[in-house]
Length: 169
Image (tube, rainbow, N blue to C red; front, side, top):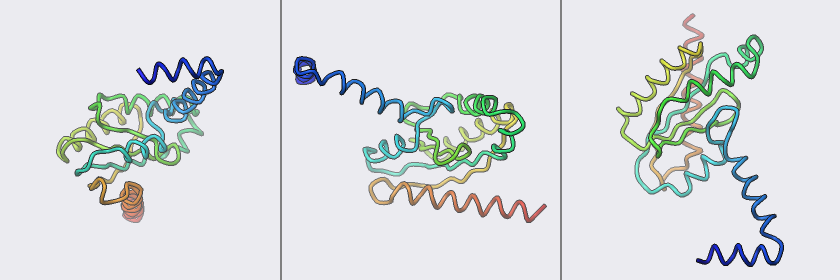
């Protein structure tokens, strides 16, 4: 009732069109159309309203995206990333682009075993698209830890893992 009344008053006073325009812009910056997933800003907003409890967080770093962009073209690589992450997820799982085009974060609303099964599916899907990735998995205690701190720690651990692989070669 209140929403309808506000819209009617907003329309009568002439500012409802501006509100609708701003709402549309907010939706546009929340969704990354290129990769077909949420943006970092939207992810962080979801995390601020997340109910307390333990969640599984996965930091994914797609391998060689920059060189693939140069050899295959941005549109082709974007299509491959979209297809990789098109596997069915629970509606309560949140997939988001983190920083650049090669870092993705997933917040799973289930147990570690189920999350690892989904990551294995993503790896198979990625291989079918000619992509690979490294990842780190961690726990986020909602309301106790900062999600940014958790993701940054996972990112650092993943970088160390990648550096170790390069040294082993």
